[in-house]
Amino acid sequence: MSKKLYVGNLPFTSTEEEIKELFAAHGEVISVALVNDRETGRPRGFGFVEMDDDAAGAAIAALDGKEFGGRSLRVNEARERERRPRSE
Picture 1 (spheres, one colour):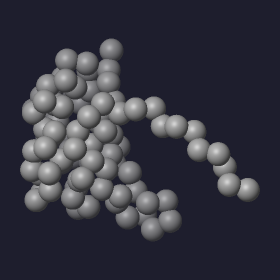
Picture 2: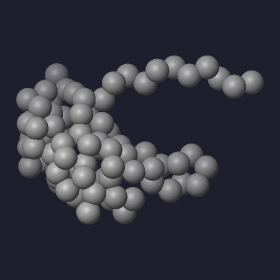
Picture 3: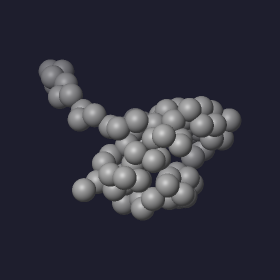
Picture 4: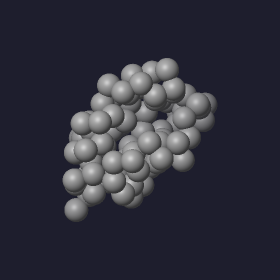
């Protein structure tokens, strides 16, 4: 079973490879997805990491609040995105 983690307050220069390496120290990383702005294509400073359950708990404990690239990371279990009504 795996968990998806929300990773916030990332430096805008972060790469998926750097994030994978950071989280891999705590267990197997299944996937990494950094979110880019739809219109500008620039990074938005957050992303998602999928790990197995045990590794996810260890990663949250070790990395939430840890400094990375001069910024204090926010790491927690991702919540399902609420559906937003489409604007007409």
